[in-house]
Amino acid sequence: MNRLHDMFENLKQKKEKALVGFVTAGDPDISVSLRMIISMCKSGVDILELGIPFSDPTADGPVIQRSSARALANGVSLGKVIGMTKKIREETDVPIILFSYYNPIHAYGNARFYQDALEAGADGVLVVDLPPEEADEMTDTWAGDGLSLIRLVAPTTPGERMKHIAESASGFMYLVSKTGVTGSDGLDTSEIGQHTELLRSVTQLPICVGFGISTPEDVAAVAAVADGVVIGSAFERLIEDNLDNPDLVSIITERVCEYKAATKL
Image 1 (cartoon, rainbow, N blue to C red):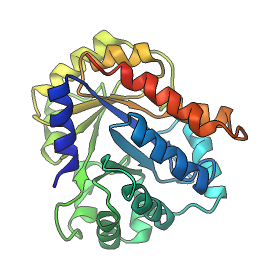
Image 2 (cartoon, helix red, strand yellow):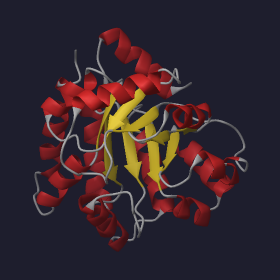
Image 3 (cartoon, rainbow, N blue to C red):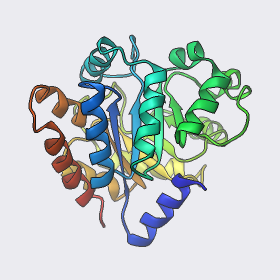
C-alpha cells in the first residue's frame, strides 16, 4: 500500500489539491501536540509533515526555530517523534512525512531510523540538508524502499539540476516558493507557476509548493498551479500565539478547515 500515491489519485478524482500541514512534533507539549495533530488530520490535512526538532534548524525562520526550541525543552527526541508517529497512525490513514535535518537521523542510526519509522507507520522522509550526492550514506543502509524520499527544489535551481534531484525522489517533489527561510513574507504566484511548469517538465511526481503561504487566498492561488500546498510557519505562528489557550486544538482545527476549503477547485 502506498498512501501517498493513493491520496494524490483520490484528490485528483475529487478535483482537489493536497493540503500539506507541517507542525513541530511536541510543540507546545507532547500531549497537546498529539491531540492537535490527530484533529488536523481528521479535519482536512491530506499529508502530515511531522517536524523533528533540531537545535540548529538553519533553513527555518524564527517561528519554526522557536517551535523547535520549545519541543527540545520538553525533551522531544527523534525516538519520541517515532513514538508519536505510531500513535498518530493508530488514529488516521493520512500519509506521514518525517521532516528532519540529517544530524538527528545520523545520531539515531540510519538503518535503525528506517526500520523504526516504517514500523511506526511513516510514509516518507524529507531531509532538508542532505543533497542527492550525499544521500547514499543514509539510504544505502535502508532495508528496502518503503519510505518515500521527498526532495526539495529551490526557485533558483536550474532545469538540469531539477532533473538530477528528481531522479532520486519519490512520493512528491517539494518546490520552495521563493528564496529565503520558512515563514518569510511575499508570494509571487506568477513566478511559482513558471517554476512549477519547469519542474513538471523533468518529473512525473506530484509537486507541492511551500514557504510563505499563510492565507486561504495564498492557498487557492498556489493550488491553481501545484498538486499540493505546504503550510508550516502559519500553523506554528498560531500555536505560538495560543500556547496557554485551552482552545488551541479547536483554533488550529478551524484554520485547517479554512485552508482545505481553498484547495478545492
